[in-house]
Image (cartoon, rainbow, N blue to C red; front, side, top):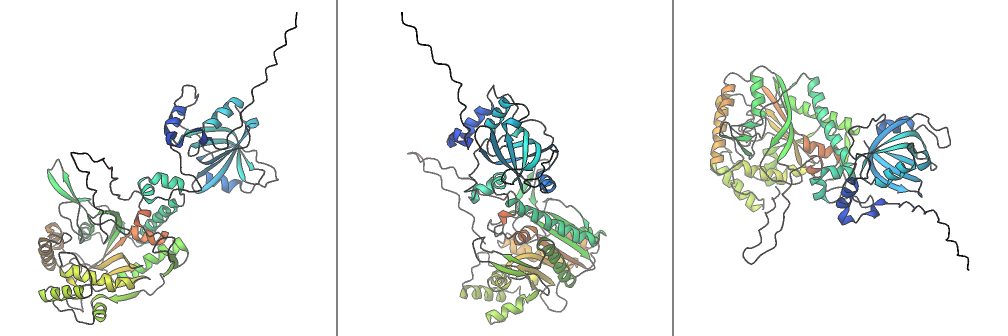
Length: 551
């Protein structure tokens, strides 16, 4: 009888080599669905969203404290814990995994060795098979240097703190699409960490404003966001409705009239930093919701404000850049580079005198006359300067100033002495009839500040408001109405006062070298995303909403 051939000995199953990129496990189009199944599986054995992880060292502190470790020196024996978002994951065989985690502008390598993992091989395999790029993880271990000399945490424990259910853009390509970046700012910050620096600079701008004013004894206050009358600026307001009072209200376009009432009441130096809302165009320098600082100072005039504006702006520029000369790219990072010099003295352009010199003719007076308006209509038409209806004197002058004067203002430049017809809240010039003691500060051709000696004569103020009301009746949505509450406060006596407004967003653009206002507003206004419905035989496809036109 033949001897049966013995069965071959059972060979131990070979452990599959770890993949270099676990994202290969998932179809990109099914990433969220597959990741969700993975995380909700009954045999996952962990809570992917734990309540707490004790962090002993923020990443900046870890880098600062342990950068002194040398590659071939004694490793640290101190056990620390860190946390951050996984930027990259790579495996070296089946027993070693490297993670780069990021946080607060620092990157640290976490080195996970199977032999050193505290809870054993099974937990090592489970956690490293679970983690993906984008996950937020915590790690516990000892600091040291890898074989290549990179500062690392040699982890004995790794914990998933919050998984990322979406496949992040590849590091090589990054996230560059503006629509995605501005609509999903969180994703923009994950993929483009430098974006966060813009908002740190913005914060420093606001801190600098507060520091300057606080040191001069100003008091920061808050005034209403909703008003019965939209006053304090020439702008088209947003309308809202108060249900309990059953009345329409305007979102504020400026806090000016409230702040001046506080000066009447005896608060000689007040300021407010806050949001304003203007129902106007959206473009590279305009957002319907924006931030300003306005201050009002009793017993000051616009001559004092010249000096204070230079001091304030220069102090912030110096604190951020360490120099009064900065580099700026007005057309974006790939465009031309210019130098902006904030050194004193700043140039002054006298609005009417300099405009008349350029057009070669005297502008007829009084500026409120029909003759003046007709002259400006003719001048704009001949010089091909567009001004949409209504073609009021103030709007026509503004267009000509934009065409011929503002374009000269690369370094900080004051455009001064506006006509009364353009400045309903400014005090008349003490030497130049029909003009006001007002200036606007322009940098890189864009308005940054607006300031003037405040009009405190209640009778003149009522006349100015009446003129504005006529312009509004003629179709100028940006003109003001008569605010009787404010004019009544003037009857109690507003001391000679200087008032100042700074556009925080535009100034932050200059300080962060960004050319689009959306880069310095965390969640800018965006057009609704269009959902195109297929055309049918019974109805036409919807007409897309027209994009807003630029100024």
